[in-house]
Length: 107
Image (cartoon, rainbow, N blue to C red; front, side):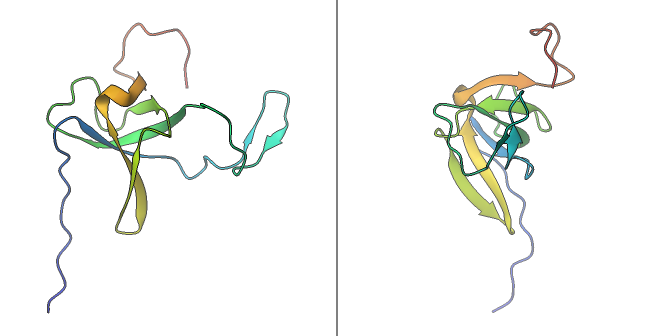
């Protein structure tokens, strides 16, 4: 049987495909304390980069950074890379150069 050629992925409905940066392992507190990747912080939201969006997604575009609850997700592996699938309604904030106004905070 022949190998399948690479297939493109199209997200459906209100789904958003994101990838968490690999650097999101260990992190430092403002005081400089190193927090290991294995430490769990209750109800901590996470940032990820949008890779693809479904046709019914209105406020998010590929390359945006989105803030979401890591518990509201589905994990998937595509060609050796790990991604998350979210619903647009589960995204709490969007960070992008195209977003005007905002909070005055920057990533």
